[in-house]
Amino acid sequence: MLHEIKNNFITAIINDLGAELVSLKFNNIDILNDSKNSTWNKVSPFLFPVVSKLYNESYLVNETTYFISKHGFARNMIFDVVLKNESSIIFKLSSSSKTFKYYPFNFELYVSYLLDNNNLKVNIKIKNTDNKDIYFMIGGHPGFKVPFYDNEKYEDYYLEFENHETCTNRLVLNGSISNEYIEYLNNENKIKLQHNLFDNDALILNNLSSKYVDIRSNNHKKYIRFYFNDFETLAIWATNDEQTKFICLEPWSGINIDYQKINDKIGSNKLNINEEKTYSYTIQVKGE
Image (cartoon, rainbow, N blue to C red; front, top):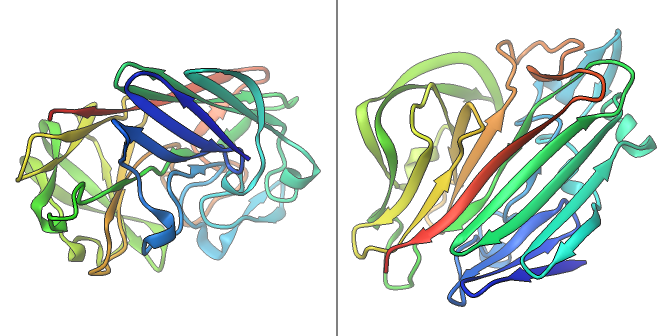
């Protein structure tokens, strides 16, 4: 079921399947990936309780093997709506017999969307409802339409960080996050978009000082600003197809230091009994 929220600037549509944002219109122009006519059939899924693909898509807890698919199960489950008004909505997913097949912990996962002028703020709250500590990874995966206009090319666009950066890129090998890093950027703040940028899968950037990154064009002053303050990793991804017309900005948290061998602690994020934590990101459209 689809749910709409709006204000004078923005109209957002969210699917209760995965609590996924499927449309985000500023002045009646949708800035998100068109999944029906795209090389990627998603728009903005949430990643929980894993990010990326575990080795053999499995992990151990108390010597029991659990199998879990890439990016976890939350994106494929129906969320309940717990609160809604004209400009905001809150969704909830609780642990159940279905989730225990993949993740042997009790939890509550809340996803909220709040419109404020030309901002969409997205909050992801995790609460530990178990009688023991829980561990998890979490992330967002919004895909933005690039180019914005039909008379532009993908290569007209670039990403611009708040600060000049010298960071690391954690490599992806065989579809899974590796334990290998390479240096990326050298006191630079721009990444030019081109399809071969993703020949080796996503860029997984760590040690960033910036709190936001912009999607900009060489042709005009309209741009998208994406705040990812609460996350220690920003992944950047698109399909490396010449027909690709989107870019994903993926804020991630809790990625294990040793991703290839995960036992008991599925993610470095930890919540004590009854503890909760909120992760937020914000989307703005600015300029002309």
